[in-house]
Image (tube, rainbow, N blue to C red; front, side, top):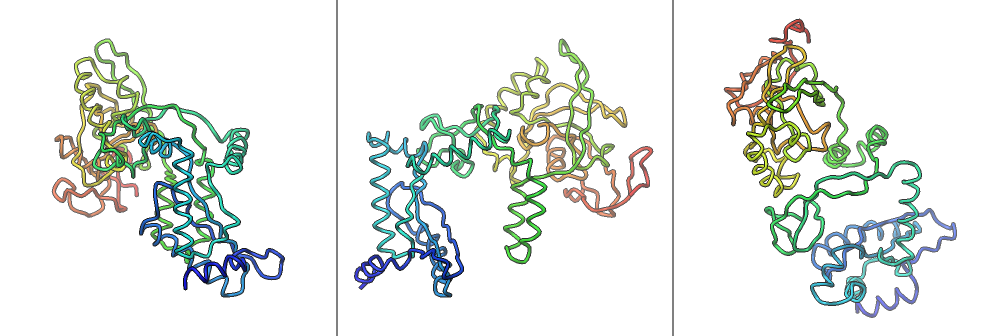
Length: 388
């Protein structure tokens, strides 16, 4: 029965939009699967959802365009082909045909005349065209940045592809490698993206909007310059940190530099260089998700240098740690452990001072082991005492 109706639908072009202006139009776009083999139940789940939407609009009388395609370009296809001693095109397009046959048995309401493969020149010429527009507008740029690297597959991995520190495909221990890459200046549009998100409230789930805001990652704050004392043959220098809480500057009791930032290597004394190198080797095996996890025990290495608090004149020890990321702000922070949970955990782990500078009425962080973040009056803050 299924095969019979599939043939009828195909002959009648039931799911091909008329596009003649006779009905209001709707466009339903699903993710494109990667052709690594046949479909699995994850595909069934994902495409059922798109199919429900497409069929719903069609039954409501709308002219629906519901294309289908495959995300078939890139290093994974090449690696799969190498593994099987086959040409990437041969392996990839064979899998596409296998999946296409399964999709047709599955009977999703796709318009098969609008079938796309990202590995077709007819498709990727447009991604290249789009890239050129970004480049011409100054929105595409190159920079060095550490990435997850699988030495066996010789490929970059997304954080999600690193499982327990290993490549999800081959199980090899993943390391960090600095590569020169292309980036898009999405930060130029952060304000507009966040502003437009207001229009989605009540229409999109709150948890999705929160994920999007976190992904955009816009932070408002100030840059504060700390003088770094000379040490041995290392001259004094200035280091600028970014902080969202400049009002808590008197509460800074130490500084932290991202372990994989160039700045860590510039600041470390000769006596501490070997310890830093060993620590960086450990950090190289961690994903950014692991580094930012609130579950992980805080680790770090003292760099042998001290910064000067520009307000109090206090000497602050400078540490390298994995919980600070090199691409956030300047890759260095002033640590205010009484009012930042990750800083507090680091201070408690290494017996560093914790100074409350905002009196919120909450329990002392060294007792509760929880940083305070509410509003209150400034205390222990010199001329700022008593201010909100």
